[in-house]
Length: 583
Image 1 (cartoon, helix red, strand yellow):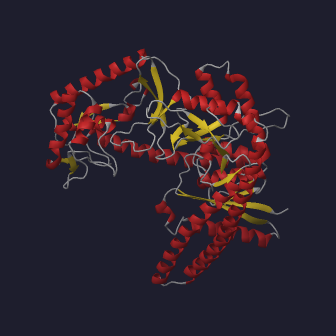
Image 2 (cartoon, helix red, strand yellow; image 1 turned 90 degrees about the vertical axis):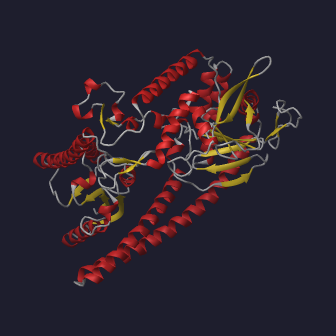
Image 3 (cartoon, helix red, strand yellow; image 1 turned 180 degrees about the vertical axis):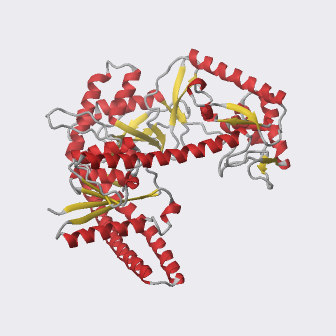
């Protein structure tokens, strides 16, 4: 029986991928050559089914897209043989390698390495295999330790280990391992510290710096905010000190190795701020943090059902819970998540929490159970999926054809390159190969995305049945559940909510039904793992819009605000879904 072969090819960095020796194309050429030789020695020995290429991924773990796709194909039985140029391409971790070998045994997968051709069916062969992967892991960890110790040694000497420069400093042109004072920015640093001492609040400091148009040194679009102000106020570099292993500051130092412990050493650059001012600011920051923790501890707990689910359809910003103080009672609102320096320009800036929570509760507990409602959803979903599938299949076929042509062109160029001794021609061919590799990478990504979409296309009937089952469980538990439990119940059925122009769009999660033992499953599909998918808008018989997006569908509730001269007096109405009147 012929082997169905999957070629696994990997390089750790883009720089390696561009080299001729050890490059992606070189690995592929060697693997295909091996298969050709084996087929000449033994007729119908094997056929290459697919290539799994991880371009620029380390072998320190298994979080690699092509490797994960290979594992899925092995489970499906699409391939039964994995071929690599050497063991380090597959893994440089003993633990991961053992897991992969056990998985190969479970799926009856043949594993072959061109460099280490050991018979793993014997005890001696298996021992040699693990010895080789042990050496590969040792090499990777040894390199990592050498780099870490070198960086630690430089840090103890007060030198910098790369990275962007901070406000007030620039890279010393005579020694790039240290910093020099940027005289043009010194006054800005002093102003930040002085303003904070006057305002005693990072929020007020950031606001004042923005209002006074104080220049900000950072990424494009970033401005003065609470965090950027804190970053400057907490930075020991401004008093001529350097923090070593800053990320381990909050850890138990006795449990860390010497080169991992947090400490402060004298830096190789001069100070800008005096220690008295710096220590005063640290004391004020510490007091503010303690007061904030005390305030939060004593604050009255309020539950907002939609926090983490709701967002604004106009600007895309999340909607979070907030409480306003009325004349007789506190009023709960959903407001745009505050972003310092950015104002809210949407037509509706806040929503009354009681009203929109009541509207959704009415929809989930009453409206969606009306006769024919879910039948209409199923018909719309079916129409959406059919249209979506046709477009994805067309794109897949186009990418597959383009991929085949690119592979053919690369093979021709590699053959021509090997046949000539002219360096100019070799460089020309190399450049063309690199361009084709980039094109191939894009086509492969498109093809993988199409395959994921086709694999994730759901059965409309199963989707509606799962939704109905989830809603029944929610409806049974809702009346007796406390606010925190209701929040959890809501997330089993609802994936997200989008509010725009008085309309609420509810995206439902897909709930899988049934199992091999006949019992129902309550598994919720993790939509965050899905790739970009095509979206379509359709109408069902009751004219509530349905949108298909991966495994999620949303129902538009058409919630309209009631006109009123009093901005506090607003109502939500539902229309176009077979249930008129106020919700």
